[in-house]
Amino acid sequence: MSFRPLAGIHLRTKAYVLGDKLLDTKFQNSVIGAIIEKRSTPDTRTGKRYLPHQNTVNFAFYNTTNSAEICSLFVDMYVYSAEAGSLSTEFSKEFLFSVAEAFIKKRSPLSKRFKVCDYYVRPAREGQSGLVIYIAVKSIYRLYFHPLSKIPGPKLAAITSGYEFYFNVIKGGMFIWEMERLHEIYGPIIRITPLEVHIKDSSYYEEIYAPSKRRREKSAELVARFDLKDSGFSSISPEDHRKRRSHVEKHFSRQAVSNIEYLIYENIEKLDNHFKRALEFHKVISLDAGFAGLASDVIHKYVYGFNSGNLDHDDFNKSVRDGINGLFKSTHVLFFFPVLQTIMNSLPLWLLKKLDPFVYALVSQKLDLLRRTEEFLQNKSPKSETRSVMEVMCGPSMPEDMRGAVRLHNEGFAMIIGGTETTARSLVIAAFYLLKNESIKTKLREELRTVMPTTESQPTWRQLEQLPYLSAIVWEALRLSTGIANRSARVAPNEALVYKNHTIPAGTPVSESNYFVLTDPEVFPDPHTFDPDRWLRAAAKGEHLDRYLVNFSKGSRICVGMNLAYAELFLVLASFIRRFDMGLFETSEKDIAFARDFGTPYPDEGNGRVRVIVTKVIED
Ligand code: HEM
Image 1 (spheres, rainbow, N blue to C red):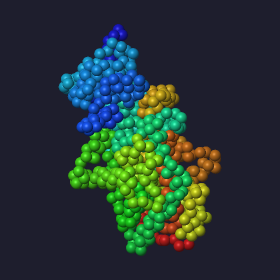
Image 2 (image 1 turned 180 degrees about the horizontal axis):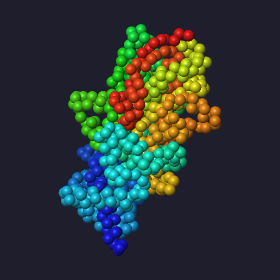
Image 3 (image 1 turned 60 degrees about the vertical axis):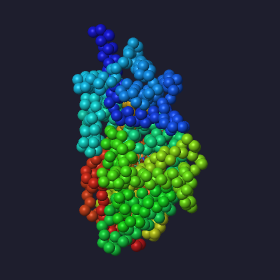
Image 4 (image 1 turned 90 degrees about the vertical axis):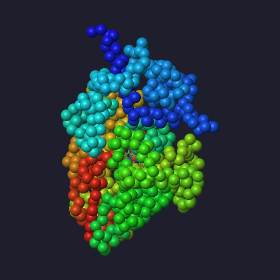
């Protein structure tokens, strides 16, 4: 076998792989957005945007050899010029060809004499037969030449992300169960999409979700769906992330959260009034809506300084969750078609209301918060006694280049999304199991009496944390609530990760689903049983189960709102159990079970509902 034909196939394959990007509208949208925003300067007279001068492009390209981002930008510029001639009017086609060639040559020593020409656009231009050849060559490349080709997994998943599309979009949030099945067949490491590796091994979690001394990035494609551009949450590089997070995290330190315990208690009192009225009028209460209302009111007040008033409604303003549920339920569709975000944001509200009430709720909520952010920036908001997080973030301490209204609004909205459903679900899970297990509830109530001598007592979070049984209940509820169901890959750009006898090349998105760690029977025997005592038994043996409590993730991107979540869990559960007796009403395990992954866990139908009847207000 001669070397030349092999090299030819290899180069053609590479050309087609680049051509793949031409057909990938998701990639185009994100990169074109980035090109327009980052690389173009608006003409001060006309307001039009132009691409930078050719020399600037040349300079940037040759001086950022390792930057995947800039290479992608150039490849895309090339694609656009070759295909449509749009956007790139200042570049000659020859120049863009040469950029793409240089890109290929840098990547592959075999391509020294390679000319790009029209391989790139061939599939689109040659119609069906070209497309068939293109798909065939691309599939062969992904199966046999791709750096991940040695990672086990089904061939179809290695060839196309249509595999994930089928399970998550068509079947509705079911890819997590398919991954579970694949792990049973192929072992703890699998290639779940053409570009991503998934690991199911609790002891490896901290390798992927590593602390900041080991560089970890997020995957741009995975965060795009949330439309939280330039927020800490959506930052790709650790530098951007650190810069942005530093302005958020000081508001969620232990001390900062301890300072707002009064705010949590204010809302607990409101929730308790609902319980008392329900007893008086024999009304059934939806605990899920009540807890979501509480979490939402707390985070809105703290971050934006206004009362979102969910707990002031008789039914807890059930629609408060519509926006967030709208976002979660469309998470998979938005992942595959991020352009829908742009469409969604540009349609008039009246039309959205007709098309999809959930999306309408989401967009209106975002518009309202954007308006409030703009008012803070213009210093127009009425002054509150205590300054809200956004008021501080929009103040002079925020550097000029980070003061964009949309960026700050995205930062605020990340806190609102992060701070509502996740915490509410943990509370719901805890309440469900406590109401189902009389003996656990009674034991907890006895423990609570030590720091809550009367039902009106308001112990601090710090006091409650000293109670071993309550702590165990909080951890067990967190464990069974899962938190975030969706995998959130990390990329180690400069480090090949080694898992057993597999080397995962640097730059590969690698993920480990929290759910698999939280229900690992090796770590948590009988994992689906609510057993708070497991934490006490482990502590007595000197075992540190908390290492595997990965609800909040680990490492540099660990949840910034973790302290607030813990404070809410401790305070709300303590008052709930110390002050009331309740019974579950037409609610069973299947109403809260994790059956579908839409970002957070959802049951097979609906949004996860726990209904109760209040039977007694405790008086002693
Ligand atoms: C039980 C409750 C909660 C759970 C289980 C949870 C879980 C998580 C997880 C797993 C992440 C990492 C996401 C990723 O890797 O992509 C995260 C990040 C985040 N969470 Fe939470 N969260 C909770 C409560 C909160 C609260 C109360 C807030 C309010 C501020 C919040 C705000 C955020 C933000 C802003 C991020 C992004 C942090 C960053 O990348 O720097 N979360 N959360």
